[in-house]
Image (cartoon, rainbow, N blue to C red):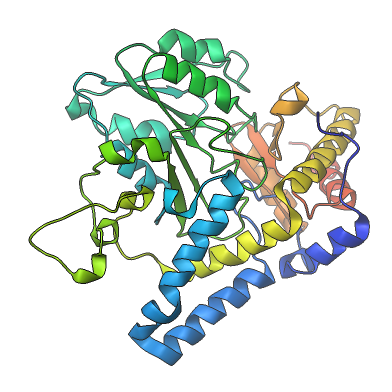
Length: 388
């Protein structure tokens, strides 16, 4: 059980905050949409540009391919995977496509998702309706979480996989990955977890949870910006996965430049396609370095202490929070039900407070660099919103 009182010491928080220049000017409560830019990521991108200028194409062999390997290794450490089990992609949709293109739907043409998932997940299989794939939805009664029983009722011998979120993007509810894996595997199905809203703020071990696939990216809690996503593939599956629409980075001995035959890499890197966006890789490395310095478990402890503080202060104002009641299901995503949330977010932005909204909801997302002063500023700005 996480200690609800646990938080990072003030002096340590200040050291971290100093590495995010935007925090000197803004109150950043929007990591749920885009993590703030750290000085580490800026420095790593400048390093990439310097290497490009100095070495030209030879930078690929001198350092850039090594940076790709470093990204796989660092991400692997965060999720309990080996580097060769991690493949690099331009976005989560591309990573999902690599998985979807690898599966045989002849005997198993059903994919189970949740009605609280981000649209990227169901769209990947809805767009394949001409292949006879049927998408089924595990539903939520409260708009916050989806009980495991909902998935259990839908999974059958016709199910290819469950594809769902580690953390729901509106409510912040954390799902039981081990429970989902057990449900899928009892029926011979696979489990794919979209951890875009989890990796970096929720400790995750792909082996302990018995995951088949995990997709995530640098945009949010990994603080690496857009253009880089990751896919973990369980090694037990590799031999049977042959994604169509592949590319030369998936080829074994790719620098032999073979054109008349194609052999996949013998590990999870066979899920890659083409040349990675190196600026994004370097930015992502800066974010991963920053997160490793803090530690995911410690970041979660502090984040949850900030969520609890926000819950207490908001309830005194009569604000309605859309967060899980169970402590273990909570994350750094907090939603407030409000009329005209776009107007609220605009008002907050005028006060230098960065938030986001979804239909009927204002979203805020404290993280390891958040202070109670940040949350007090947010609440005080809410108090000033004129009635309509």
